[in-house]
Amino acid sequence: MTRSAEARAALLRGITRNVVVLGLVSLLTDVSSELLIYVVPLFLANVLAATPSVIGVVEGTAESVAAFVKLGSGALSDRIGRRTVLVGSGYGASVVAKALYIVAAAWPVVLVARVGDRIGKGIRTAPRDALIADSTPAEARGRAFGLHRAMDTAGAVIGVALAALIVGLAQGDASKLDGETFRLLALAAFVPGVLAVLVIAVGVRDVPRRPAAGQVPAAPVHDTPSVRRRFPTAFWVFVAASGLFTLGNSSDAFVALRSQALGVSVRDLLLIVIAFNVVDAVVAWPVGALSDRIGRRRLIAVAWGLYAVTYAGFALAGGSVAVLPLWLLYGAYYGVNEAVGRALVADLARPELRATAFGIVNAVTGLAILPASIVAGLLWDRVGQAAPFWFGAACAVGGLALLAFVGPPHGRATRPR
Image (cartoon, rainbow, N blue to C red; front, side, top):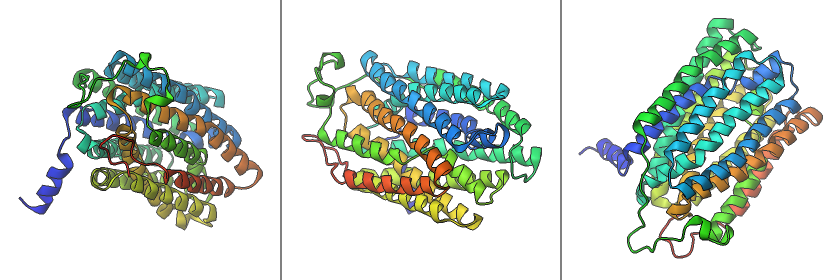
């Protein structure tokens, strides 16, 4: 067997059907979402004349409302022992919410659409991540989450490419987004979203819970007296570090607006985002596999360090030349953080509490996004465009300091270093 064949075999080891099918679902969903996600803030600013503060409220509210749903959905999934019904409901809700974009003529309508879309994400995320972990042996979790992230991001590449094509055909290299162009994008987003729901119905199956060899089955979730005592200290330290990091991790809408302010046209911004997503997809799978060998914590530290450098770069940038390399660094951050972070959460939770653990992490980070985006909008309006990015870089450094205290849980053979 050649070295390349051995490398491919190593990346696929432990990958199950559920992981591949859920990756396909995420691919299709990201085609749908990424047709819109980077043009929604431009639609708000260029067409509906919303200020950065309003955009911060829209983005932050959407993510934070979804945070409550993520927590409840994860706990419900663990309680009923079923993942697929919640996964399918969440993806379906997001498809329905996107219909509002077609008729949006004021920013509150966009807010409702964003909230509906994020509620769908909140319903599905924790059960989906738990199902990936349920379907994968412990020694292959990094590979599984890395593959899922790579397929998810491949969908983003396709979605942004389609968006760039539609924008280019509809309005050329115009510096501002046109309202009719946005509605064309909203219509195009429906097809892959519906296909994703159909794939779930046909191809995804729940995994029966089986205790690990020699492990005594844990008491039912509702019989455990304290939420805090269900998880090791390392889990709660990681939750705190993630919350502090996210406090400076405002919506990517501000990265898009900053890029436009530095002189990048709508079409060129979408082309840059394609490159960003390619880096994300290329990095995620092999880095996820690497975390199975060397541990998770140090790789998450690398990701948060990349984020700090990227945000400091956007703060210092004086023209459009810096935009592409900064987006590429940003893609590397995403590729490492998303795959390895989820694998670490799975390491730190018992199987019967896995969706609850994902829900807690998602809820804390989602709640932090509301003040993060509001603060970013206020800093942009009242201090200057660079201020939100300096704030984000500082919070990333603070999160890194807390991350140093995340160690392996007592009595478990995991490697979250």
